[in-house]
Length: 401
Image 1 (cartoon, helix red, strand yellow):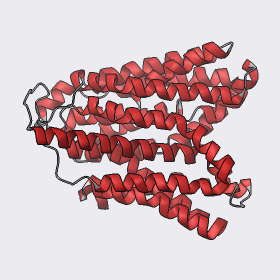
Image 2 (cartoon, helix red, strand yellow):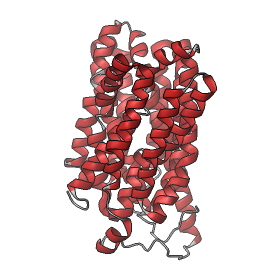
Image 3 (cartoon, helix red, strand yellow):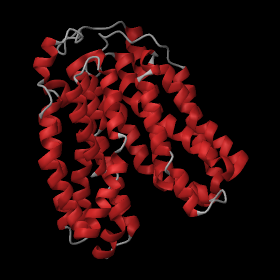
């Protein structure tokens, strides 16, 4: 694999699988039993999880700056400790406020230990050569729900939801932490890798026109990432209900939903192979069109072509996940990548936190026609990407941090 050793991609990919499975995918399996034992409502658990996503948004820029300065290994190892602490607190929760506090700790760990931190760690190590490595870890971590949901369900059935939380905490300490600790030291890798052409400490001023362009690109990417994360979270949360609104049975809707994961992985394999030499801006533009095309097909043809919607949505989402790492690298370069990623993804995390509630309201009012809303948002993201050109912003343009 160009740029990054297979060992690095493999260990980071597995660590990311564990991190996603024990955080983002945790409420789907544990929210109901957690709410029942704590004598609170299930929506209260999801509200606490939304608060965790907001906490992750606020933690992102700080974590990104730390990765730029010290490298990803120390930050990612620290997040394993934070994940473990938050999960232990969650397993010990006896009421609403301890549960909320536990989710806030997990949220900080998410903001400094999920994809953005992993992407930043790879860019800190390998500079512009990190694109294939970014794709590689998303290929592995694309199975996070496939691993996380069954494992959480098994631990809950065997040991209760509290035991599941303690089990995930142990996995972070016994497996996730050593995997992240196995990453190379950033300073050594940067010295050995000639592709790290930017000096992280360089203080070179840019022309005002280029500074303005850099600011415009930042705003556009922040909007695109917020729009696409809103859609992916909304569909992930409400897909069965949305498909039922088209006339499908729940069993059929769940079966159709199962196509999204394989479609995501297939699209990432396409990005890793055929599209690896294509500018990520072009692949991102194509990916933003996949959801609205699928929505039009589903609304026009009904349940008969629901599988087309699932495949298109999954494929587009799979490539856009990679684009969140590769687009800033292609357009800005490696200098200051971590802090920039944190700021770019802050609106996206907030949009992600709001998506289940807002799209749920749209489903209540419009039924399946709520897809016109998500489709319009995706088309707006495509239009925003069309404002950008493929030539990179000069590397001397510095991102405030």
